[in-house]
Length: 343
Ligand code: MRU
Image 1 (cartoon, rainbow, N blue to C red):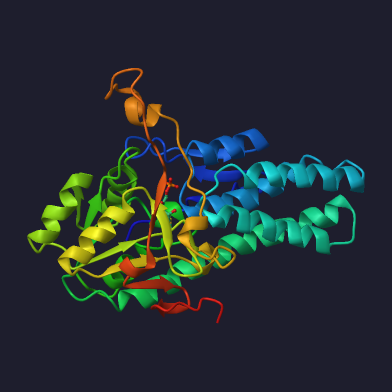
Image 2 (cartoon, rainbow, N blue to C red):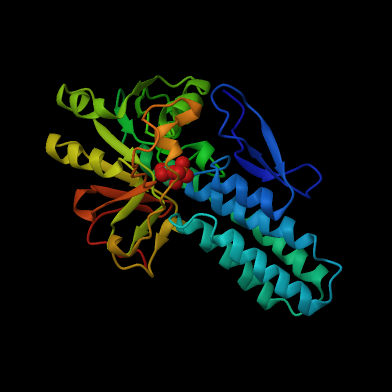
């Protein structure tokens, strides 16, 4: 068994956030330590660290690392600097609710501590560690619940990367696959390459191959034909934000996969920790979709693929309406419509 992937963790001295630099995979495996506000924000915005749960964990730990630099300030100045850093990290990416959820969780802890900066920092460090540990446990539970959906020989199509690289544990969409394989079932995964940044071919295929799980990379435009020829039994994808009605924001192209699955009568599951559910957002219409720079489409990885000056539409995510989702797998179990996540 391969050693577990740790996408985000404390550095050994506990003074930095250690990430796997996902921009370099699959060519190079490099870990980086984030020690400043600029480094944390840049890592999140450039997708060095990515995936909704992982950016939440990185935001929480990153806030602690940044706040440590303000420790010698008086209490009021410390709290003002902490609030400024929290706002900057919170706004680094808008769609995944896990980022604002994790930063807000730390700020609530800071407000509850009536003491000097050192006491606030100690409480924040403990809380950020809890965010990581809880995510690891939620991933495992998602895997246990979701594995029940996978029979011997199941062929799963996934989009983007919602695996270990995207979380603090064994992933969300890939967690059921890892658990089913642990239990001795043979599972095959079809990974959409996921234009324009190729998280499916670069990251999902990398982590599955590393674990010895059969994976076939598809360019995004092949999903329809593999569904029609009977090669796919079910789809499982992750989520960046799930609205109260079950609408799901996830990587651009997810909606298309859901439409295709519906047409071909293939179950379409979403797997996510409950930290991805946003009860304050009633429907997908209220989810802010991040727009990414045009060069990701015109010069992906430095190679020109469209003429300079061509206009580009580059939303990072889309919204899949709840009616296309067969069920949502969280650490609490398998939820089916009508959703009542508040229970
Ligand atoms: O832009 P990215 O790579 O951060 O997008 C990631 C996704 O869309 C994932 O599917 C989602 O965050 C779920 S990760 C468990």
